[in-house]
Image (cartoon, rainbow, N blue to C red):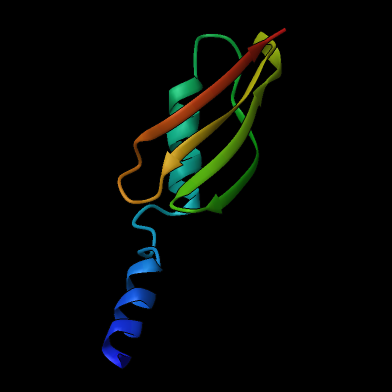
Length: 83
């Protein structure tokens, strides 16, 4: 019974991130950079295996939120708004 309990608890814990908060922010900057303006990171949080990065580029009137996998740095989901 003790082994079974340990197995359940160990399986429910997520692995520690392979990608840092700073690396996730850099990925988002690269993804959203263009010829006009610079991407500014507004916030970065970590939740359930992903970084949620909020950003803006005031020069081209864009802002958004990107979700980055904390294990491999791949984008999961992106939301972009253009004025």
